[in-house]
Image 1 (cartoon, rainbow over the protein chains, first blue to last red):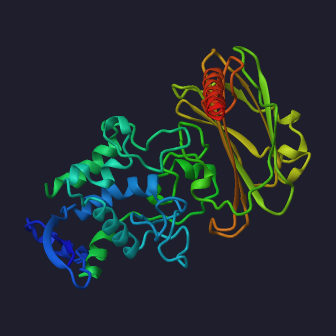
Image 2: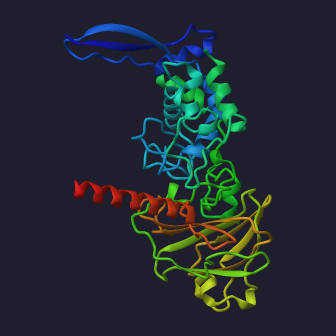
Image 3: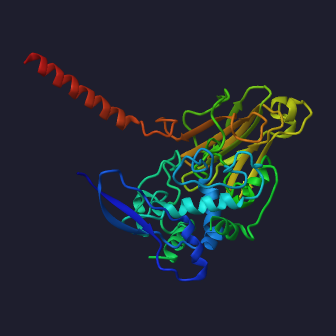
Length: 169
Length: 227
């Protein structure tokens, strides 16, 4: 008999009425038949959707949302919008971001904040960060070997970190 | 619930709907469909080149002439890129910077000296397809997709520091999406001594190490056979 850990993802306690609609982004992983289950709970950071829209999304769209990178629905982390990758290929390239694109970008980015070691070590913060400053490596480092964020002092990193850490942990 | 989330997110989001084929678009915010300050030259100041968006299914054949094996302070070099004269729409972005992100002296030929190949529609009296743009300290050469098929640019190093060259050529198929386009990328590290003209760290020291390793392996094989 195998033993498998089931990671149940739950939201942190609600702190405001605005947080209530964040429940829509939650999911529960299933277990393989015949396994005994041990529950391991991971909190999904609140990650304010309005801060995402106004401050985080512009960074992710500008630096990550290329069709050859994370503007790709097949990627775990994906971001979509105007003049970059469109979630629906039928959308006019220059049309404003659609509600669905923004919602998917938010959900995918928020999923990248889940880490067993806490939000500070979440993939969204560590993958684009230089190895010298705690990053973990990223195919998106440019061909000269430069990471997207050369250090934690980069204002873009600080915006992402403030958003990631601001709501939950 | 999902719809409520989507509506809350999109409310009051700024919007824009313009074409993405003009140089000015690269400076505009990404949420407005701009480059967010990226010009996709492929130089270290941008990092990324056109390849991050445009497909590479039909890479154009681009000829590069005048690439110096090494550079000397105060010398002027003429670099020429030539791409096919066909139905596709070609655009180009090029940039040279040192390790601090500062450009060398860089110039385009005077309009009167530009051959038809550098002009829109390949017309002998046409406008120049190339522009030299200042973006802060950066100097970016941009060729608009108006029918030219050659660029010559001159640069003059002002010190012995390394220069990093990045250039990207997009051959667009004329459809709105980036699918079906082709790209050509050029990256070089130009050094003031005769070592290497590529970005890879293959220099004399590394070659010596490789030779020593090969010698060691050969010796080990020889001794093993004798046993």
